[in-house]
Length: 305
Image 1 (spheres, rainbow, N blue to C red):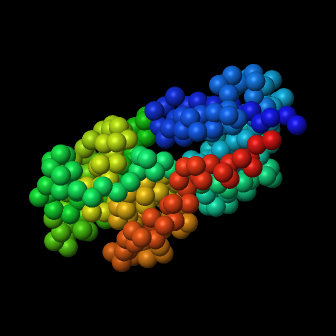
Image 2 (cartoon, rainbow, N blue to C red; image 1 turned 90 degrees about the horizontal axis):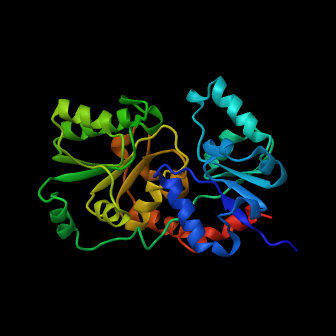
């Protein structure tokens, strides 16, 4: 029987997919190769870079393609053309949530397997001494601290909101909290936070911005929060849901991606009822444990031959 040998394509974008790729090669090195010529499975974990790979190799090798999410508001003629050009080479799709699977099933008849990505519990965990952490990041005595660590603009336009991520909705929620006499301080991290920062300055909303941080520092920042808000309209994950779950950070989220697979129903909101959303850290923690390493890798073995 031929041994499974898997090659993962590389985005090189300093994004979460690079982290997934690095962790896969670290923990699954026995069935992985960095030499695509030796692979009998090509995993397009970064599907937008598929055309960097030789069509000849894609034709003769089993191809697994991850779809993180599909934003149909941006699914124009060019996007559709690229999707179906790649679909010709794909043997099986990997969707990271049931919502993504439902989106994908509208576009292809190929097999779709749903498996959420794993999370590294050595990176994301609860830290007890939160006051010491707040002092470290100058967040002591700042009031109620709300976090958002995902980008809010496109790379080509650093002013307009990236609507799929919902920074405009996040801003509306923050304004509502402030109007109800909460002393609010917002903590931002990640690239392309220009939309929120510009609006915070205009509205005199208190915030701190940590652009790019190590995983160690980002976990510490999570542990400073009183609440994390996912306000997205479209998501595959987001991985922040599991990261908050493992760190026992209070979190509420719109009903996107894996939210309803990890969070309590009382923690999921829409823009008509967000004031009623209640974090449930115990439910989020318990459900997030299903995705930790090494157990989080086990279901992926079924993707490959």
